[in-house]
Image (cartoon, rainbow, N blue to C red; front, side):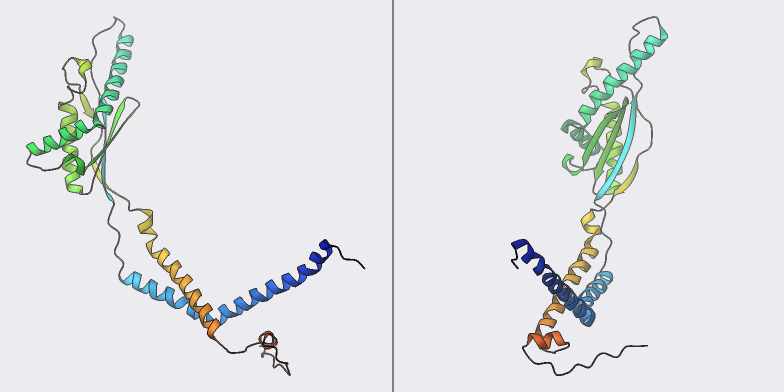
Length: 248
């Protein structure tokens, strides 16, 4: 009978599967015997981490406010509805111009100068300003590492935004746009990074890997013969085998 290459592979596959199954069984038995070696590093790391754990400090603080423009444009027509339309349109243009001004460096410099008049030294590079215009509304957000200082920065930003915006809006001919806040500033902490939140789980995972390596090393150095496969692998003749006692 002639065997083709495909037939030879077919005959080899049960042997390969048997070898793979025996290796899995070997590692399974090893883990059953040495599970405590796998867990010892994880238990130690967990205990030390819990005893020395300190909640991560917030990444900083954030405060946000919304502003609207109540600027009255010049009358464009005798129709009240048309005047209201131009009123909304003017307010939207002003909000767009204010947004570009707020996210620039001149606004932060003006806020720092305003705080300096109150005896507060807050350089422009110590806080971050984010602004956006949504549906004719200016959304202002400021971030700082200190909550108390951040509240003072927002107070200074409100003064600059509502009283010193004439230079940022030359379209108004030197007039100051009427800016009104629609909510109150509330300082909230910025959540810590995901890495700091996963610090302890990552330590435990690495400890489990180290424990697994410790168990494999102990198994490699152990010269004890436990089953007939190990005897046969040594090339010795097996004379007899005492089976394990099974519980009824």
